[in-house]
Length: 143
Image (tube, rainbow, N blue to C red; front, side, top):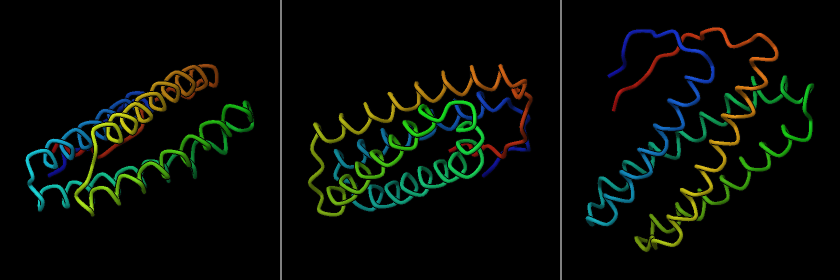
């Protein structure tokens, strides 16, 4: 179920999305540890789709514009997306084979958190400098 359209700044929207991705990951790990295989598979699909959609929005709409002002940081963020995608693929194999190890899960969530923090700080500063911190309309799902 989705909530009514809500106006948020881009940084608020990003913070919400980053927190949602982290919650999904934690739910996935909890389901895996509980040996809830159907829940694990369902949560995996939601997590994978959510990260893909999140990256697609950033890579189509935000990073190309950000690149004009800070090419090095934009490329670094894109490289982090690529690394997270690799980690996601590795995680997907572990979920499919039902052999997810804590070390793999911890590395993945650490990479997500580091990326989210870096992105939040960089984008917030950049948007404020550009005067683009105005609200965006977002449909926010409340799982």
